[in-house]
Length: 252
Ligand SMILES: Cc1cc2nc3c(=O)[nH]c(=O)nc-3n(C[C@H](O)[C@H](O)[C@H](O)COP(=O)(O)O)c2cc1C
Ligand code: SF4
Ligand code: SF4
Image (cartoon, rainbow, N blue to C red; front, top):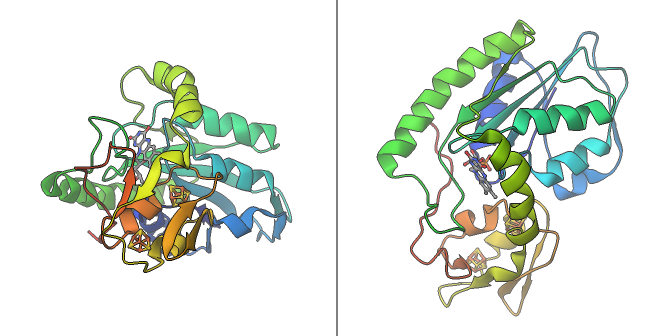
């Protein structure tokens, strides 16, 4: 059984690829999946979580979803695969500790480097096309390799932490959450055609169209699904995204 969260498709593709190779079911995490739910596990069934790295840690909505998860029996093997544009920092530590508090032991964890989606700070943009293609190609090989390791139920953690992982996860991440998670800087430009894609795409149901224009509520996790899915590139975050690109997953 695999649970996944994905804003622009990278983690979704990893989850689907693993599910196909491991012959298991896959569940999408959405706003409405946050209520207590009981999942029936078959004998010796593994449970996996696939998600994007958000500020060198797991996305907040994934953690709140996990608090509502119930299984018919203890998972025999619990693992995660995170996708990141560059590096995951101490995501594994944060996630494993969180699972431990829920009474579960995470046995293995991996990261897969994929095209970057974060664009809301100076110096951060989507990858050039050649980099995007190269990352996707490598991700395909890596995900196939991971499926084998997960099937073998290896106890191992292979995450690309990058440089200064502690500083990023334990110092910069809390600052990011405090100052850069607010949806108040989202606005829409004159290019908006009132199509409603942003409203329908937001996995947290945080956007509502009023008089044909999107308005952001305050339970945003900054996944940027709205920004990247807008067909007119009409969504902006302050002045930071003026010249930034958009990205949606394409099959390698
Ligand atoms: C809010 C936010 C924060 C991010 N933080 C990181 C990060 O700390 N490290 C990293 O390598 N990539 C980071 N990224 C990039 C994503 O983790 C990466 O592109 C991921 O594959 C997106 O997956 P998705 O398409 O399933 O949403 C961030 C993206 C967003 C939207
Ligand atoms: S997706 Fe873009 S064009 Fe469509 S309503 Fe939202 S902001 Fe407007
Ligand atoms: S409003 Fe946009 S950034 Fe915030 S949760 Fe919804 S899709 Fe993600």
